Image 1: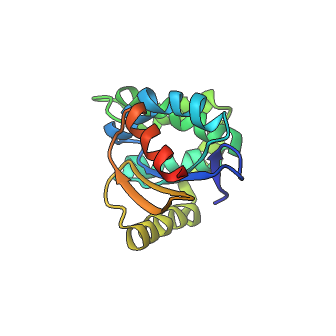
Image 2 (image 1 turned 90 degrees about the horizontal axis):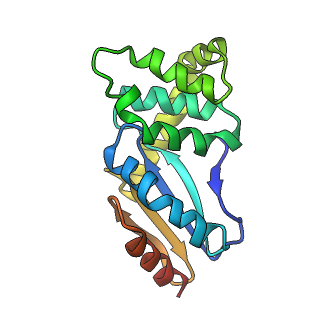
Length: 177
C-alpha cells in the first residue's frame, strides 16, 4: 500500500483526501475542482495531495483494489477516469460491474489475468479496509470526500464534502498561513 500522491514532498501544505470511487460528490470534486487544484496549487508547489481509498460499498472496494494494483503513476489517472464515468461502470443498469471495471483496467494497461488476481487479492482487500478503519478512528472520516489539511497554520484540519476551487484554494491559503 504505497503512497499515492501528486505534488512535491516538501510542499508547505499537504492535503490527505479520503474518497470512494462510487461517490458522486467525490466524482464532482475530481472533475470540477481537482484540475484547477493541480494547475494552480499542486503544479506550483503550494500543496501536495495524498489519496486514500475509503470505499463506501463493495463496488468501490473492488475498484480500489484494481486501482491499487496498477503502477503508482497510473493510480490517479485511473481513479479520475472511473470517477468521471461512474454511470458507465458503477451504476450501469443491467450491466456486469466487474466486466465494465475490467474494460477500464484494460485501458490502463492491466490484462484480464492481472485484473482477476487483483480483485481476488484478500490481503489487499484487508489492507484497504484496515486503512479505512484507521481513518475513521484517527481522523473521524465518515463521509467522502474528506480532506485532512496540514500546513504551517493548520494541524489535521478536517473538511468534508465537495468544494469549489475557490473554497478549496481559500482553505489551502489559510493552512499556509
